[in-house]
Image (tube, rainbow, N blue to C red; front, side, top):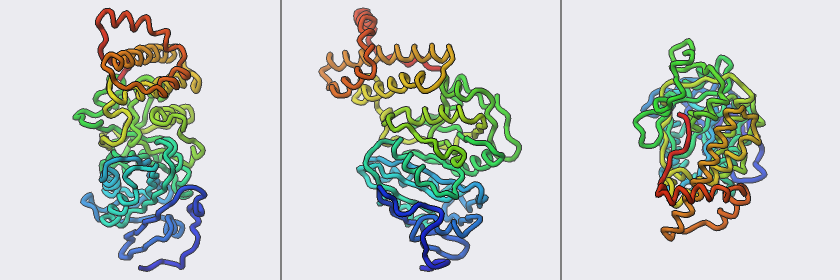
Length: 396
């Protein structure tokens, strides 16, 4: 083992954290030398341009300019081994390497440390930090990651632990943000889908936006991004890379523990910048990990939880953002649909002797006390024999 200089306290990262534990497992292949790091980011404080040599099948990584150092934030909570390893392998296969990868272990049943060690044995050049914290949900985990980003990193990329990047994702994001843009997203594949999200949308049209000059498939977004998100959101969390230093104080709302926190983050950013760019080709494939929406269809075990958090989100929108008349109308329609669906879900459980989460129901009634007003319309639908799953009124 060799160090380029005697060990010293890092200047590009925080001192030992006041809460949580960090495991620093950074081994870089730089030129022809192996440098083993005792602390994350020491190497970067002495380098103007980090250059990495990839040992993956994707080929040699492209050196990133010092002004475009990227930190990757991964909130982690999984019950199956190997899920995080696949996500990290997709980072190792990037044609442009990030400066650091921050994995926030949110008290996961399968610890992150073992997953990371397995990846580091195969790709020792990845700079990965693992931070452990008490379970707080994805918003709290992402916020911990954002709090831990090294000062030299200008951009932050999000990757959920069950998703995988395509090899050009960070390369395209860097090229799109470099002219001064603030927010990048791309097309992606949902789990089990052969058509991409952009292809499935009837509202978002990628050919309606100006392609940026250069050789990469990236375009400048034209239009009202707030309306795009509210009316037909096509932003997937694992496709996002944004100019972190410009919005360093922005955080996810932790009261939205299991759903809606990312949606509100994008909405807030849309009120702060108009400089959006996107990748016109799919750059991410979504997986099936621990997810409140996976297997949460109407009448299923998770459906009440999903309906509760979707209602919480819709109730918050007019309080947090100034909605126009059309947006207010869509919000009211969605709330009517959610209330009726929640009541139908409860009736279904009673009729089929399924469990009802009493604690959740009490919290839901406290949050949305007008829910009982929808009983007459639901009762009529039941009498009419129309108690069946319905599609939410949404535009895509």
